[in-house]
Amino acid sequence: MTTQFLEMPDEKGYFGEYGGQIIPPELKAIMDNINDAYEEVRKTEAFQNELHELYTDYVGRPSPLFHARRLSNRQGGAQIFLKREDLNHTGAHKINHCLGEALLAKHMGKKKVLAETGAGQHGVALATACALVGIDCEIHMGEIDIRKEHPNVTKMKILGCTLVPVSRGTRTLKDAVDSAFEEYLKDPVNFFYAIGSVVGPHPFPRMVRDFQSIVGKEARAQFLEKRGRLPDVVTACVGGGSNAIGIFTEFLTDEKVRLVGVEPAGKGLDTPEHAATMTKGVKGAIHGFECYNLQDQEGNPLPVYSIASGLDYPGVGPQHCYLKDIGRVQYETVDDKQCVDAFMVLSRTEGIIPALESAHAIAWAMKAAGEMSAEESILINLSGRGDKDVDFVSDYLSL
Ligand SMILES: *Cc1c(COP(=O)(O)O)cnc(C)c1O
Image (cartoon, rainbow, N blue to C red):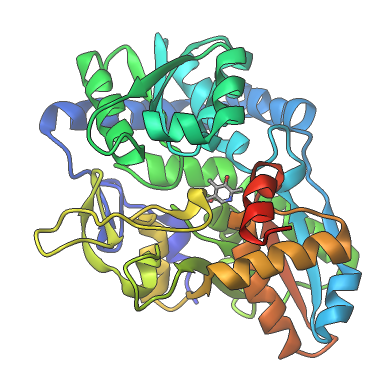
């Protein structure tokens, strides 16, 4: 295997035929400017030291690598290991890239960081990073989501960000994106639009990947130290794809390590209620870049669904699309029932309540482990903790 994908994306932001900048020329200049600023600071020791000091002293990195012995015994096959991103400050991997983006915005002298949020996970991580870095933060959120996600809304307010309720259209994420984007267009020179995953126009898929790649770097070294060899399989859930690319990147050139991304099959791949972009999507443009996506006949993004709100995105990161096409990463699906089952099993065998997003990867690994030998091993990126999901699961299972 070549190292071609380590040099990706190309200078136009393409991973093969995916990615790029499908945006108006005015915005292209702004994105190029962000790319130049990022290229410049990322090579400086000052920026890297500042970021890595925050990873250590603020996020609590390195996150532990945990051998889930009771879960492994229960499945009766491969040894299962968890990369504990759930133990990060704010409870998930998102803080890794939000800190990077907030720092870059500050270095560029931007006045305000802007974003939309659906369930509020991106909003809380970004508001946290902005409070720490000392830069204004404005989050757009649909009114329906505001009503549903009370704890996250309260956290964002306490953290000092400006919360803009969106009352138009569906009053959910889709319209929050439009609302935040309109605000951004009012002054893109002074505002910074912080994208929440490895999606959007270049340079975001690359930048967010770089900020998340700390996860795989740590995990690979920790695994080698613990086991004296590499894992046979590395797996992670895929929404936009940031936690997955974060753990995969360091293993891409380890040919023998099988990489598996897990998407939500929701209520079934034969129903409209899923978000299995890789499995069921077609090639096209969405939100400023080319990728596999779920769209209607006219090419508009379809309303997608997942029991895990962090996974319900109709597109997916361009690098994932490329890695699928060349066969380096395999994409599988897990439905709601399997996800909730894995959520309960991990809670009761290891005392770890996972995010419903992460439970998709756990469900796939549980199934795969049983078909492997006890000498083999699976490394799962446990992207976040499940505190946010306990009331939902309790209702869902009538506990
Ligand atoms: C947001 C989120 C995800 C999905 O985002 P990716 O960019 O695909 O990683 C997964 N897990 C958790 C815990 C999240 O909060």
